Length: 84
Image (tube, rainbow, N blue to C red; front, side, top):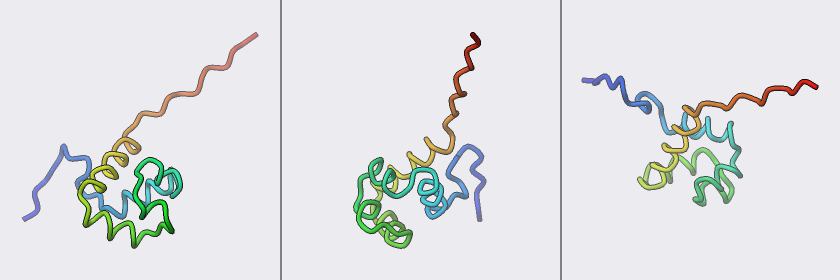
């Protein structure tokens, strides 16, 4: 019944997992700036966010995009120390 999706980076990732990673990485305040929805800006909570995002496809799509950008971005290496 379950189909394998080897090229789908969201396969097996729940919406709750995405939000937890984003909140850990950015915090609620910055997450609210990046995805400006009330569930992230006014008394944010996991429950209200999940409820809203499950009902609102455009907002969920933005969260998924931010998750992918955050999760799979390659960090830039720190600049090399200059020797005098």
